[in-house]
Structure formats: C-alpha cells, structure tokens
Image (cartoon, rainbow, N blue to C red; front, side):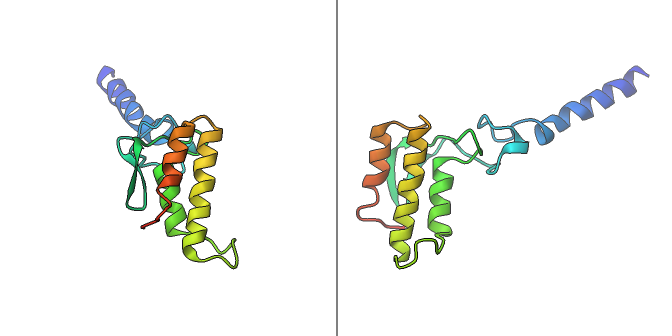
Length: 123
C-alpha cells in the first residue's frame, strides 16, 4: 500500500509543472502563460540590433519583450493602413517598449535603447 501511495504522489507531483507550475521559470503560471517557452537569458534584440540589456517578462501574459518584438516583426497587422510594413513594425515595437516601461519592467534608458535600434531598422 505504501509503495502505491508513493507512486500516486510522485505522479501527481510530476504533473504540477504542466498544470499549475511554471515550465519556463518566468514567474507566470503555465495556465496563464501565453508564451510558455520564454528564455530570459537572452539579450533584447530588435531585428539584428542588440539593445544591450537582458530580456524581461510581462507578468500579465508571460511573454517577454523579445517575444513581443518578434510578434511585431512577424505579424505586423494591417491596423495601420497606409503605412509600410517597416513603419508598422516600428510602431508596434515602440508600443511594446512603452508598455514594458509603463509597467516598470524596463527602465527609461532601456526603452530608449530599444527605440535606438529602430534607426536604421534591420529585421
């Protein structure tokens, strides 16, 4: 009986990272994590430009600044009619940097570093 109980407890504890844990150790529970493979050991990259500081995560959705910037580049929506793709990507990245700054996740200096990488922008 003791062995069966041990196996049941072991299986339940093994499943915790999948159901309620934090698989990528970004501080956001798996069930709330929109970006479950966040790697916070990377520097923030705006296209091919290194912004010079380590990535940070948005605790509301579990996505990092790098992941949000990548989404801007890969999926620049048509919501900015009349703008070129490059201008839409830049606008999206500015929005993301401002959002991370407003939440206190990056400093004003780090926000400026991201924006500096937009001139010239090289995806």
